[in-house]
Amino acid sequence: MNLALFDLDNTLLTSDSDFEWSQFLIEKKVLDRKEYESRNLEFYEQYKSGTLDINQFLDFQLQPLSLYPRAQLDDWHNEFMAKKIMSQIAPGAYKLINEHMLGGDLCIIITATNRFVTEPIARILGINNLIATEPGQEDGEFTGQVSGTPCFREGKITRLEDWMDEHNLTWLSFLESWFYSDSLNDIPLLKKVTNPVAVDPDSTLEKYAKENNWPIISLR
Image (cartoon, rainbow, N blue to C red; front, side, top):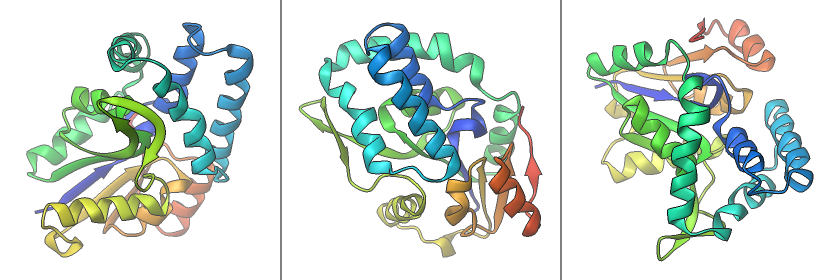
């Protein structure tokens, strides 16, 4: 059996779903533009530069989930999918996923973005296995806190290996493994797989990929 790992934002999508979710709530006037937009942009720039403090960001990103009932959030997310996400699925995403599925590979989306935002996107893409940052919940409602290790940078390796343990798997269970990502933040996990692939990469990852003879592809 082989393993195919896919980053989501700016890889299978042409945008960042975390950033777009906040912008969507700002546009709906659920979040105050003056208070949230500049911070959303600031955190996004930090992410792209590799300087993001994930805990500070999650405090910012998850807190609004605690302010509204889950049913209301789900309604907004349905609208978010229709208005923002469907048009931002990378043109080559389905073809790449299907190639791995037809080959019998175990396919997993692994993303720093929280499960509430990303689980419906993973379903649309046809991938049942999702490893994401987990928002804390009590009685089905969000607490505004993170649960467990954020699925970010080295945390992606931790969360993936925890998932493997739960499914009685190890790295040795796989003849080959792939990871597709656009981001310098994913270099730690890219270095773990047998087939790291840079997808529409940022400048840092593009340079690193060229230095290490990793394939560079575009899904756009």
